[in-house]
Every structure is written in C-alpha cells, then in structure tokens.
Amino acid sequence: MDSLPQELVDRISSYLERNDLQNTLLLSTKFQRAAEHYSEAFSTFTLTEENVGNFVEFCGGRLAQHLRNIKFRTSLPALDMDTLENNMETFEDNPCRDTIDELREMDEEFTRQVKFLFSTLYEIEQAGTLDGHRGLELEIYTPTRAVDESNFCLHRVFTSWRIHLISPEALPRLACIRSLLIENGTDFDYHDVPDPPFRKPDLRILVDISARLPKLQVLKCNIGGDEWTRGLNVEDARYSTQDWPGPRRDTRHDFAKAIQIMQLPTLGHVNLDFIYPIQKADYIDQRMQMPDLVKPAIYDPFSSSLRLLSYQLRTMKLKVVADETLFWPADGSTPSWPRLESLSVMFHMASPSGAWYFKGPHDVGAKEGFEIDESSYPPLETTEEDEVANWKFDWDFDWIAHRVFAQYRVEPNNKTLVPFLAAFAKAAALMPSLKEAALWSPLMFDPEHVEEYDSFDSKEVAHATEGELAWGISYVKPRTQAFTTVVGEDFAAFRQMWWYVGRWRPDPELLDLFHQIGRKEHGEQLAVHWGDPFTNPGLVERSEFEGWESWRFNH
Image 1 (cartoon, one colour):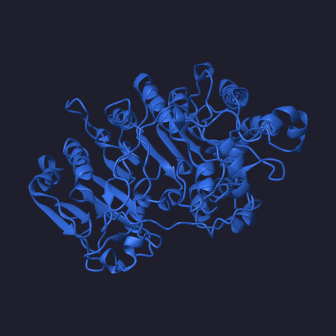
Image 2: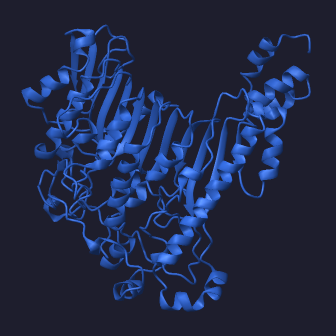
C-alpha cells in the first residue's frame, strides 16, 4: 500500500464515508493521513477552560494541520438554589429584575471568558505551532444562563439589557483567524422558552472582536431573533416577554459608532443575520405599533454603518431591519462599490422608524412607530407590574392556547417601500463588478384573529398561503447562473431580472432605475421575468430566495 502515490490515495479516500475511512486508518501511513483529512474528525475543536491543556497539546502535534474551526461557548453563573441561598436578601427584595451590580458582574464574566479565549490562542500562535496554517474560523456563542424554574420567574429568562465586552482593545491581536462567527448560545427556533436562556449581545461586540483579528476575511453572525415577540392574547405575557426598545435602539446606534472608528482592511465577505431565527419575527402581531429605532437621528445609523462597511466587500449577505441609507447616503453623496460581486439583502417588513414597508389588503393596524423615551427601558428592580404579571404568566403558561395569528402585511406600502427600492437600484447600478443581487422580504399570511379578514379569500395572496412567502427582486449579469430556470436561462448572454412581487408593479421611473443595473458594463439587452406560471399572480414561496442564497453565500 505504501507504494501507491499519495495523490491516488487521497483521491480514493475522498470518495469514502467516515466509517469506511476509519477502516483504512491502519492500511498504511498514506491512508492514515488521507483518512485523518477527509474524515474531518480533527477539523473542529470545542475549546473550554476545562480542556485547554488538551487543546494546547493538540495544536502542538501533527493533527493540528487538519484544524479548521474553533468553537467557544460562553456562560454566566446559573440562577439556581445555591445562588438563591447565597443571595437570599437580594432576591427577596428584587426577585424579577437584574440590578446594576448584576449587569456589571455579567459583563465582567463574559469579558473574562473572551480574554481567556484570546490569551489561549495568542500563546499558541506565539509558540509557532500554527505557522503556515491557512487560517481558522472562530465561532463564539452568546452567553447562556440557566434559570431554575422552581425558584425564579420568567422575567429572568426574557431579558433586554445587552451583554458588553469591556475594554476590547486590551485583547491580544490574533493573526491566525480568517473567519469569525457570533451565534446565539441556544438553538430556540421552535421553542417559546429557550433552554438554557441566553443573553442578548451588544451588537458592537462583532466589530470590537473583529478589530483584534488583523487577517479577518469573513464576518458572520446569527443573532437577533429574540428581539421579536410572537403575538399573544395575554397582556401580562406580552409585557414580560417583550424586548424593551430602549436597549434595542441603543445597541444599534453603538454598533454604528464602532463601525465609524474601526478599520477592518482585510475583510471581504460578510454574512450577517440580525433576525435569526426568522421564525421568531414571522409570528409577531402585525397590528401592533413598532418602536422608532432611529431617533434622535434623522436616518438610521445602523443601516448607514452597514453601507460604510459594504464599500470594501466582495460579497455581502444581510438579514436586517434597515432603511434606504443601507444603500444610499443621506447627504446625497455618490458612493462606490468597486469590488462587490454578490449581494443579498433580506429586509424585515418593519422599517427602523417603525413605519411598515408592507400593508394588508384591508389596511388595519399601526402605520408609524412610537418614540422611545425613559419608560422604554426595563426596570432595575421589581415593579408592581412584574408582580401582577407573575400571577398570569409563569412557567406553566399555555403558549399554544394564547397564540395570536395576525399576519397579513403582504402588499407594498409605496410611501415607505419605493424610496427603499430606489436607493437599492441606484446603488446596484454603481457596482461595476456585480454578478448577482437579490432584495427580498419574508412575508406571512395568517390573519386568523383579525376580524377584517374573516371572509377574505387567501388565494388572492398566493396559491399556497400556508407556506412561508416572499416578496422580492433578483438580478444576474450575463453568463451567470440564473436565479431560477423556472423562468430564465442559465448563463445567458444578456442580463436577467426577476420580479416576484405579486400583482404590484413599479412606476416607470423606478423600473428605469432597476434597468440601469449592469447596463453600463453589459449593454442594453435585458430579460425581465414577472413571477412565473406556477405562482402568478400571487406571491412566491420563501424557499425561492433562501435556496438561491444557500449556494451563493458559503464562506
């Protein structure tokens, strides 16, 4: 077996399943090396403070050449019986809310753990054991905090104060990290109460950590779904589960401030999902008034900061609450995207100001956002409202029985949406390297508890309204794989554009702006597809856009 060329052994091993690779480990040294590589058994290491010795030893051995991914989970001291007994007086006086001291201690503990991570990687990097490595992906999970349901109320689960990283400039710089992912500490796609509960991160953590990674090429996040509260018909439950809008606005503005002063010169790709998991935002009560996350600014600082970040990128995928300054500066100056090749933006139907991009066939519900003031922040001590809420909303709450289905916003609100679309089109026309782009919004139609829709025919919206719907537009340049071949052509010699917008049509001025995308670089010829025979005149299922994204944005 040792007489076979390593290239042939590698080719054979690349076709084998992991169990078969295990059987080849002892055939020869060459097969052993191939099995170690193609099994990916040594590609990921979950680092903890308990196994740090094993990690250092691993990085000093020959198997470190296969390392591609480092995972690091953060956690905070549990709220359990021991914590209660050791702090009985504090919790008797304030059973429901985090105090200033508790918030500071949680920030300090999270910071300590991140410093441990960076110090460990720095020591390994300085030892030279990662010399010649092509770069690692670092995954950091937001901090979890177990809550004992027999001793603590649900106010300790649904929290709004963000976790902060203290003095990030004190972290050592790590040249070995190529990709960074910040992700929710708990998978709670289909759970009303996350287990274990996790704390919301201050958004600027993404920027502060990235700034300590001088060779960072890829930045990703999967966070933010817990900013949304599903529709419930119990006021005490809505009160207790809400994400208070004050901290939510402040973290967006702080992210913007960080972007303006940080330099990330090597960054070329971002995949930032600020509404993860999307299911949490799907089932909000769309009649409710949304907070104005912009004021006192005139335009959304968060959107503007993401635009500033985009100027240097090659690929950008966003899932975000944004306004038109995501694409076009508020001061009217002309931006430039010399390198951007692939762009996908999924935007929530609510704008940062609280105005809606979409309305219903029967126009009910709030139209503008409410202003954030001092009352928009969670209390730092237990209130009378908390005590009352605990009687009706506890760990035995029947979530299914009290769900409200009030999702009906499926038609464009031209007043808000058209300026957003126009900004996108103007920006995309200034992207000379653009190969493909999509701008879309996830929609739902399930107005079971909205009386105005009692006799409404759902087929007016889509053929299959029980599915997750989408409204959006996509573009590809010539000789590029099509967005879809249901209508369209792979690698056509001309530009192509798909409008999955139901019965809605843009006015001539807006349509002309979209026709300018790629025109200067690729000529006049453009094929425009209005929906497809299987969905017209209704909306398309969301999987059309999600499927396209899945094979275009994989870094």
